[in-house]
Length: 105
Image (cartoon, rainbow, N blue to C red; front, side, top):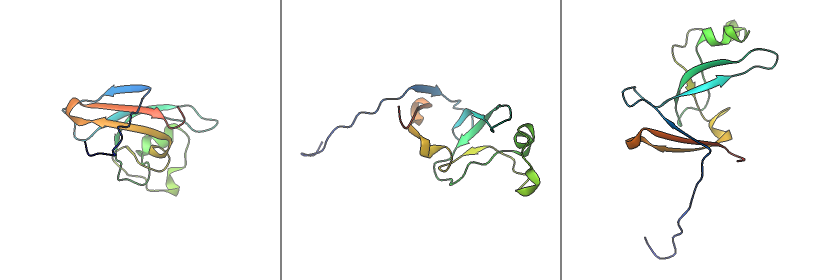
C-alpha cells in the first residue's frame, strides 16, 4: 500500500448470499405503501439505475393506480433513488455475497 493511504473498515448489519446461477444480483425486498399492505418480491440490484421499477402486479397488490405510469415492465429493479441512497452496500461477487446496512446504522 502506498505511503499515506489509510485502510477503511465498513461494517454491515446483513449478509445475503444470492444465487450464482441467476443473471445479475437478485435480492429480496419488501414494498410498502402507507395505508396498504406490504408485498415481498425479488429485485435486481442495479447501481447504475436512477430509479426503482417494479412489475405491474406488485403495484396492483398495493393499490397503486398503474395506468398513470408504464404498465408493462417485466422485471423488478432497485436503483439509486428511493433505495440505494438509504443504504451502505458491499458486494463480493466471487462469493455471491451482498452486505447491506441502513445508512444511519
